[in-house]
Image 1 (cartoon, rainbow, N blue to C red):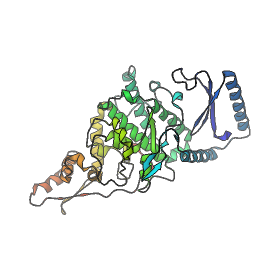
Image 2 (image 1 turned 180 degrees about the vertical axis):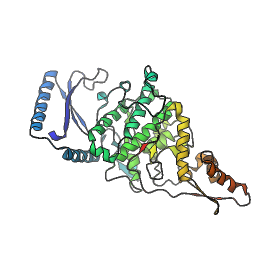
Image 3 (image 1 turned 45 degrees about the horizontal axis):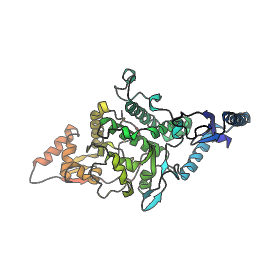
Image 4 (image 1 turned 45 degrees about the vertical axis):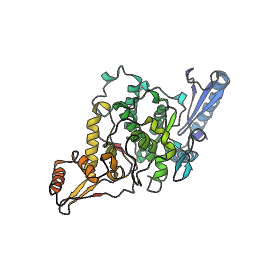
Length: 403
């Protein structure tokens, strides 16, 4: 058991956050979970703490677990942890494929009273945009601190790969602690119609997707498991819990069209999650179909770190990058091939006519492709055929930052 212990520390939360006022708290940290012990007074806590630390020191003298064995031990601990499904007993199960599945809370290593505030900053808080300078951060409101923190959190998430986790798992533990701060984010203070909240939520979605892909037991999801993957992988945020499917379908797309015959990798939120539409963003933008990463190989391998000051440019760039890979034109056969997502969310582009989708996509394509499409449409007696690509059954193992 001592091989699991990383540190032992005393904890004195503020009076407002203290779960048990009047008692003394001790934290025993392992890689995937912090265990909180309560004592009648500081003397009892300190005596117990000294005993544990002495035992840890003694085990070090005997030669604690070697790095390679430690890494294997670490991931075994996660497997057991995920099967237990953090949050059992606190959050109701979620419906997936007509079964009640336990939510897996990926940011539950620390309790809410044991996390730093957002204004404490993040070690990699320099964002990918020119707006994130020290001068502009000296005086910022609470929401602005949260936005900047989440930008840094996504950047840190995308710095990991499966290989890097195996080489330096302790760095990932720091990231796990940082995600716990999302539990104190104030949902009531969010302006659901603002660019700031739009960027915040999309960045959280991509952070959770990367987090879940990295820790997907048995490798990336497939068409049989992606439903459970997206409905069960969750973050606790501001006193509520949100899965990937709920963030996408109820919040980001909450005021947009419903999917038509959704199949892997597109996963709709269960009907029982309809209450999450209370948080639905007011922005209705068809570009989200091309910017929101589904985790499959037809999506881009990269995600943008959205910043409200340059959001429009970022959305345009991500849309163009996606469509440049997904839209092809065969002039000789008079066929235009468009992404499958244009079929699933066809009513985001008008009345559901594929020509409406092509008309929308045209403005984001390169000049050569635009000319080919326009040429096909100039012959009114022989309209081109518009076809949808097949869905991808393969998924990314991790995501990277869009530069």
